[in-house]
Image (tube, rainbow, N blue to C red; front, side):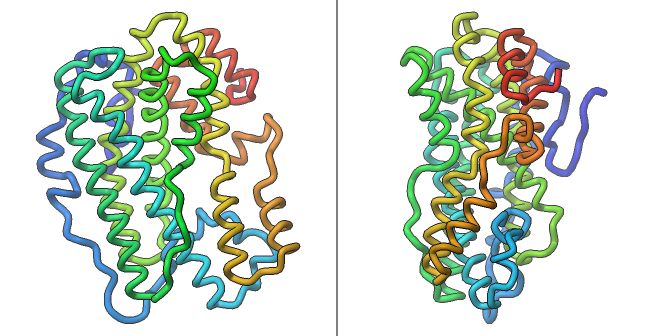
Length: 333
């Protein structure tokens, strides 16, 4: 199979079909289709907000028996605070993590020099991501204006930035630049797949659905670009770097997909909503219990997609890295 195409262009071509050094700029596609150049501002209409402001499929807590009989107003507040966290994380993730790496690629401040077309398209990523952050913050402001509910304090750390820091603590400083690039390549593909999975759901607010569809169309292009970046970096880095970084990638994926940060935030939300302390403890511990290694892929299906991405980018063609993934039960054989 040469690849698949869809409305997002998530896999426009199989990564292995061409050398990433032969990558051709997608500037014409960006010029005509990028959300910042082609989509209107998405605005919540006046009056009562219709539909959930956060995708129920992402709200793992709602599967717990103690959450099933919440009063409608309490449930409404839970979705509002979940929306603030979701949009707040997008704004931070895009500007402080993705754009930091994209700027280094565009300006040649990386351990590996990228072709001009990749550097040129990295500039379109910077523009897109800044716009995504603007849209996310705009949506948060609209939620507050329409509902009168103020956000709870949101941190400046995200799942990706925490997982990246985990890796940096384990690697020599000389490998931090490569690590940042690889982590962002994985993070951008994760976000794209996560948003794509949610756009098929129709149970949440229509304007939120439009915001997410606009976002995922841009992220489809970014995913292709970053797969080329990852394949190029992996192929040109020294074997010692592949050995050091490859051993960390399974743990990085587990850290990145871990719900620890969400659980920390949701504890505060549930306290704010007035749930009993013993109920909060039970809800969080039973919903987010740490799965054994052999159950991780089933619990967090995005891990399987990330394994696919790493295969496409030849990362798992590296025998020691492949063996590390087997040890962590992320590869069957």
